[in-house]
Image 1 (cartoon, rainbow, N blue to C red):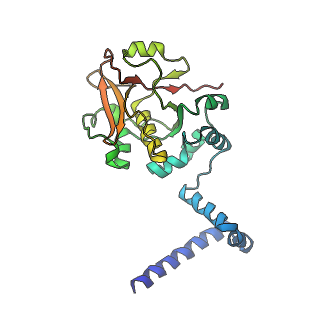
Image 2 (image 1 turned 90 degrees about the vertical axis):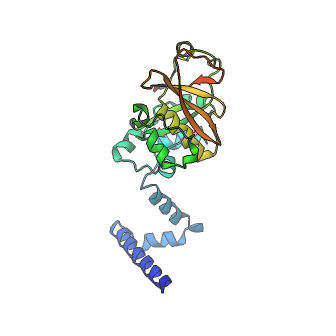
Image 3 (image 1 turned 60 degrees about the horizontal axis):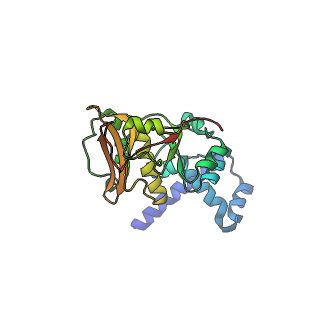
Length: 256
């Protein structure tokens, strides 16, 4: 009896879906194309489109994915792994990649191209397995952990910048390439956790990297040591020097 009720509900939903599709223009000819598609390919595409909330990648995004390979965390990944429900305004803003193909080719092995949506560190932590974060609550009331930011593309360095460990913040900034800048902790956490969920690769497993945020006591936020114990979020003085303390970096928005 329970199975019959379950099946009846399923049939009801199928009927509702069919009515929606017919209202959108589905006719016998189009329905037959779905039925005749090889390996159910056409039906699978429709299901994937529904799973993405109707989102379709732009030509610019598709080309960027081709270039970046696994180092691409786009809108689809954000929907899948962070449960993002993009607005039309956000999708319009992300339609074009703000980096040239030449820049992407240059960075395809050293950076991750990320579609960052307005999610705070605390929100990200609440959306994923708690084991992905080292158990630290010191930052729960810190403004940097609550900042949601805006939707944007970020080209985030996934490796340490050579020669920037064991240096103060000012020394690191002086040696950072003019084409790069230091992103926020929110962008770094989003990138590190998102990239792991999408690929299984842990970034900054043995090092911390300084971010642009300053905590209430005047120290600077750093993230890293992303081991099986989870991603660490800490803070250092700008004057500290440590051989496992590097600098977070991302490409500035520019063409060419």
